Amino acid sequence: MARTNRRDVLADGEIQVVHCVNRCVRRAFLCGKDDVTGKNYDHRRELIRKRLEFLSGIMGIEVLGYAVMSNHFHTILRSRHDVVATWSDDQVALKWWMLCPGRKNKDGTPAEPTEFELKSIRNDKKGLKEKRRRLSSISWFMRFLSEKIAKEANKQDECTGRFWEGRFKAQVLLDDAAILACMQYVDLNPIRASIAKTLESSDFTSAQDRIVDLKAAEDVTTVEAQDNRCEHGPRAGWLAPVALEPKRQAVRAKSTERRASN
Image (spheres, rainbow, N blue to C red):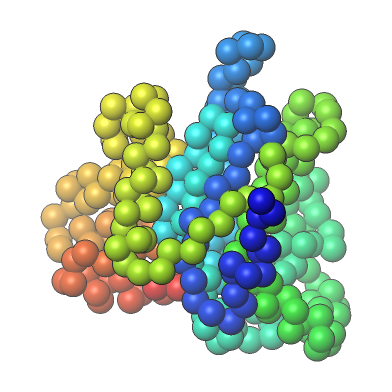
């Protein structure tokens, strides 16, 4: 049976929460320890986590949860076209440059754009409109994520060809109950796979990141400082907050460049 067309699942201009899964080609352990070759690629799991954090600070996509396994990864994404609509043309041009720079530094990071380079993006009204759409597109988020990791991995292995199995799988989550159930499923992946025994030891999961910041909040005394550690902590501050504590609303409303919105 043919797979459902992506445009029939993901809708532009509509806020959606989507569970996305992408697997390594032939489900090989290209992001973990390969028992056949004896090589360990665990460092690529951190690459994926860092790329997720980078993209969440650039695009109008919120990351609710994630889990990076040895041969695949899960992520729960929420598209925020409404947030992108509030961005100025200057912001859109700069953000697009950060994703697709015309020039790069020696370490591969985007070079500082000149006013002329940003102006050339802004003045292309049709192109700017399309770039604004792409900045809140889950498909483009997954493209920027998967493509970067594949290129880096192939460069490390000195090879070419596919790194990912194919198109990522996407399942729209239609209500809060579905979102909660999916977040539990994603965060419990390492425990289900017998890689970890507790959430605290479940590496490269959103649950572990949130727990690290929650425990760090115990080191400060004032309520506001504790709330800041929980909502804007160094480990999970880029993830979309889980609003279980109404008293933290004031802290949660503070703007941050690490995620699309609050």
